[in-house]
Length: 296
Image (cartoon, rainbow, N blue to C red; front, side, top):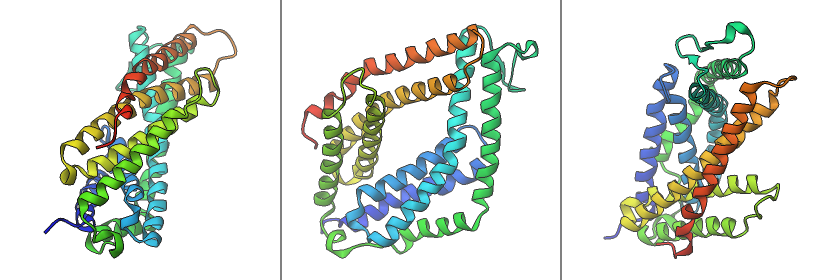
């Protein structure tokens, strides 16, 4: 007897729920990369619920996705500040103007003129405040209710028999083809180089690639190597455009903190981020090559 779509999806969701719940203790202890791990787990679960929404009842699934969006937003403030601090700190190290990792202060901060070190310190402060907000959120009734809901996905899944009783291979392949077509459509309608809308469009492509990656990874046990290959290609595209997005957002932060007077440290950081964004886009054509072929 073939595996049904509902039972296969519950197995995939159980793995995602486990990723989310096991990340929480590490976030509470503020362990390295813990906020990132929990944020990814949150986004991954929400994405899979979206891609496979036809298998699940709309009401409870929609409400859960809304709550996962809230949690991802809470984690995102801290994670974004963490990324910016690490980027600026790394660039300072490359330029010979480092940051003391023990004190999180610039080595030249006592002079009061090290733009980069002061910016890293500011991002670290944002992270610290955002982490406190995360802890408050994790202690809230809202998060407690969210935990109950995600566990309910596995213990009492809100399946729709009309679709959940179909063969898993048939439905999962249909979902992957749908997500693949969505991504390819965005790539085909990408604005020309120099168009002011291109940056945000590339971000939309990145989100679609991430959605395809997660839906394909959820289907790997059912569809095997074709789904694995699709997930790898989507992950590569997501990574390339993720590097581009990180550089763009770091550059936006730099512009927002532009000094009143010329500051060599500021210009060095701007130049480095512009170069990083350009380098990522050099890898973009190769990363979308897989979209020229049929999915699965």
